[in-house]
Image (cartoon, rainbow, N blue to C red; front, side, top):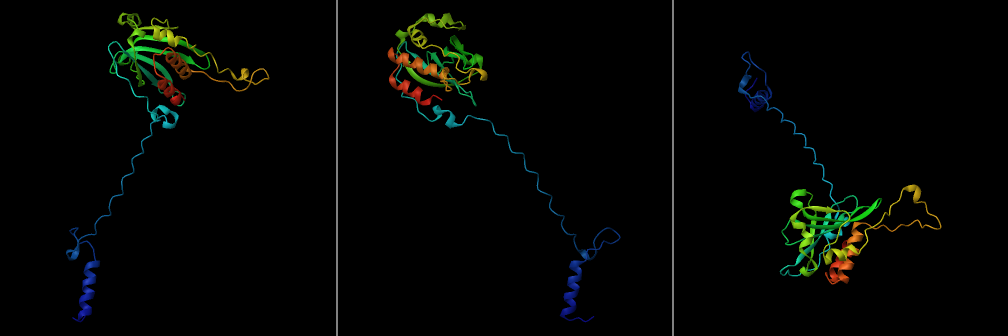
Length: 236
């Protein structure tokens, strides 16, 4: 073959394109093997399962601001709204009375039960969330004058559940005037509409009782009107 430019180009092409192994397992002509293909990408990690939460639209208290809290004075008791998440059903409401905003123990006053079996007025004295572990959301409503309470309501520091609750102070007497809701959800066979019984049934529940008990407290001048308006605004 000649030594012209064409011959040099052909030889150069042969060296780059030839990767035959010799007897020692190496590659002839000093050429290197082609790089190995890249490893396949790792499989994507499984997406975490979302934790069910209550939509904000189903819990108005997440978006409606409570009224401004008044300043406490000596002997005043803080009345808070305890909200237990009931999603996908309605939340459970209770009044929680405590001597300071940081206290985990206090007095739980509520209507306990359900719309199928009815409710009962219940008082849990010296109820401590640090012990029960079932801590609700607490919304501070109002510092109530200490003259509406007494030492007997604390049951000498001992925990006690009263079903039905036995009022021992003016505050408890006031909320007890709101009757606990009776059964308002009947079995299917009892719900058939008749001329004497309309098909639509107004259900009363623990939230209804809190609102009605709040109205009693307003009448007795223990809480202001804006607290009652707030309860009405966030009721589910």
